[in-house]
Amino acid sequence: MSDMPQLSKRERQIMDIIYAHGEATASKVLEAMPEDLSRAAVRTFLRILEEKGHLTHRQEGREYVFLPTQPRSQMGQSAIQRVVEVFFSGSLEQAVASYLADKENEIDPDELVKMAALIRQARRQGR
Image (cartoon, rainbow, N blue to C red; front, side, top):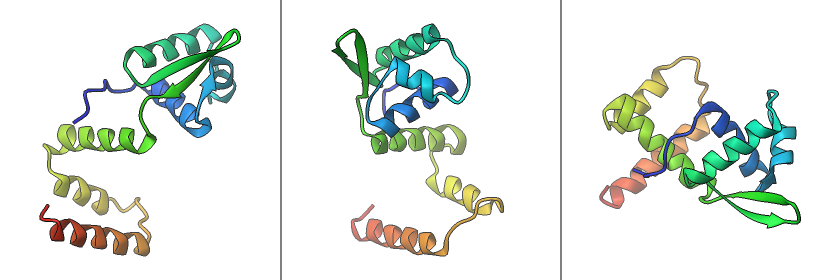
């Protein structure tokens, strides 16, 4: 499991914005935030995300441009691992069963076929 600290709701929103743009200044993040935040609050969150190791920055003129330190897919894998560990005692089977049992989750039949293929592939690889 990743050693990266977990994200708060606001931190996730900011990371979503930065991932969507590839990089962003505090001004761009402020514009894209779904709720009103002050410029100072956005800068504070960006600093915290940098301290946690999720962001890095470069300076362009008078502004900092923030970039993610890891690809979005790697962050997603880490988040899934945490959810499975915390809520399902490390059981991927229980996590998937819980998701499939929820009637509100609409699952495309093609997606089920793809998941079955991934399971077969994992078995062939001895996992």
